[in-house]
Length: 492
Image (cartoon, rainbow, N blue to C red; front, side, top):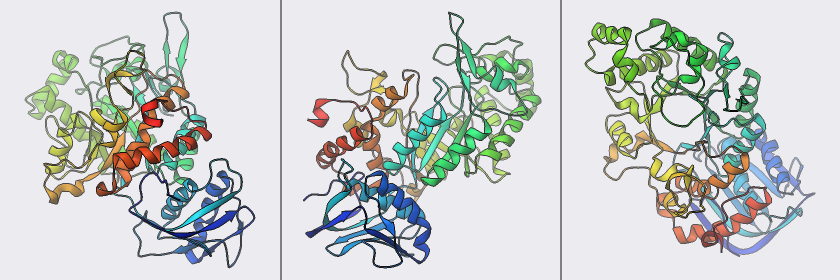
């Protein structure tokens, strides 16, 4: 009986014999492992196995092992029962996710498990997925479902893209027009589209994610992709406006004015409220696709350049980004931005998310900055699955095999700088995905492949093995109601 687990564990040793696990048996937690017991019980109950808590002698025993890596675990199955060991609640959670994959899909309440010894821990600390809720808005219930998808595949960072030209999605108490004006766009027929998250919504999502050992990293775009905010507060633009929330896709000239001190105070006020809602160390400050057209013609921006001795608008962007990187760092936060923040000089406090290929990540890591690799060539899931006329998706093609082939540590990076590659992140831009089912179709099974890239040792990854395991995994996706891309070459 072959074990089919995704992502592939560090070590799997299959042994002779089986163990029958079924509802009504007991689960025991020893010592500090007791804190993880409800989560493990819940995950197994979701798969149809309901275990009762017992003081001793359980069919499944949870044991603390402080010698294991923080997110690592050991799962032992023999003819006498199961043992799950970990050093942390996250380790128990991931071990239980692995055990779930060994249970039948039908949730019948009984499972004949092959005896085995599994040793496992993630390769990368940052295993992220991004969601753009600006081009199309998604309610809290779907965001939670997205987090469930992530947790099932051992992702641990949710990058929540909250502001754009096409919509500002975070309510800010000090600036109510961000939810009254910036969160809504008007179509040609006069209809309004949009939505926003209240502080209560955010707290609900952050707590839901925490219970699944997922960190939530908010993104507030600056200095570009700002037209939705400027529609409500045009005084922070270079020109007088008026502006409207954008109804098309693309890159637009209206950006935050870098020569106006009030612009900086506005964004600092916004970040004050962001920091109160999001406890994670990291805050994403965007920094990508900022046209310089308005700055070149703006007297205040040009004066700022003279006052600060800046020789180009690229350096002005760096000045803008460095201000907020330092501001966040002074408050104990770690700023991260798209790789354009390298242009004009990178703030010493900033980490880089490399999306325009790998070069930005290589340059940043070589200079001693932390990096998350997110190259559009391999991890952008708004791309088409294959190059066929009937394919959904935007721009170029990103096949399942291409995703699986990705290696996050650039080959040319010096070995002593490799630790600066924190991990990898997949992105889900939503210009072409207005409904949750559209997102599922674009994500799966590619997001499953990236999970293995992020978690498994490089030497353990094998394309043919992955395809075989993915065929079995497809039944689990179906049982979970996930309408994945149905290509026969993948599943047949």
